[in-house]
Image (cartoon, rainbow, N blue to C red):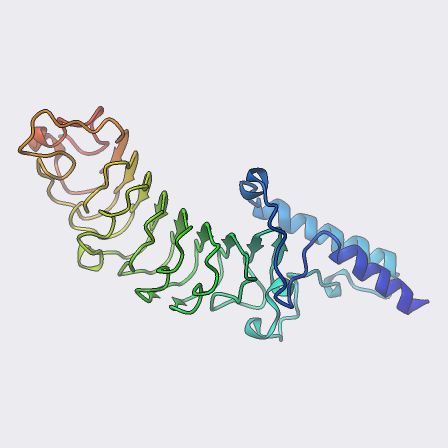
Length: 291
C-alpha cells in the first residue's frame, strides 16, 4: 500500500511539467501567451513549499515536508551537473526555468533540443562557452541575470539566428562577445564593461535592436547606436564627452532620429549643456547633467 501511495504522489507532483530528462522534444504549439509568461519568483517558491507540505501531510506524519522533492528541489549533496536538466529545473512547453537552483548551478545546463526560452537567473554560472548553445538554434530569449559570468567566448551566440532578447544584467563582464543579428533587446546593466571591451561595431549591425541597456558599467564613450533603437540607457558610466556625431550626423543638419525616444546619460561626468549641437536630431533631450 505504501508503494502505491508513493507512486500516486509522484504522479501528482510531476503532472504539471514536461519531463524531458531524456532529451525528448517539446510540443511545438507554443503560443504568444506562453512565451510572455514570466515567473514571479516569490510566488513560485511559495507555491512549491505549499505543495511539498500538502504531499507530506498526505503521506503521513512520518514524512518531513523538507524531504519531499519537486523537480527543481534536489538534495544538497547532488552535483547540479550530474542531474537531468528537467529534474534540476522546471520545463514547460518550449521554456526552461532554472532560477536559484539548489545545488548551485555553475554552468549553462544541457537544454532540450527545441528550447525557445531560457530563464537561468540568480545562479552561479561563471562562463559561457561556444558549446553551450551551439545545438539549441531555436532559442528566442535568454535571461542570465544575476550570475557570476565574467567570460563569454566570442562565438557563444553565433548560431542563434532566432534570438531576439538577451539579458546579461548583474554579472561581471568586462568584454562583450559578437551578438546575433536579430536582437531586439540587449541588457548588460550592472557589469564591469569598459569601452575597450565593447567593439566599435558591437551594435552597429543590429538593425532590429530597439532597447539597449548598458547602465551602471564603466564605459568611457557612447557606442554606435543603430537607427532603429528607441531606448538607450547609459546611466552611471564614465562617459566624459559627446559630439555632434554621437547620436546625430554632424555634417547633416537636416538629419533627425524620430525613433530614438529615450536616452539616459545621468550619473556620468559629462556636462550635456556644453554640447547643444549634439542633440539637434533628437525629439527630446537626454536625461543627464546640464549644469
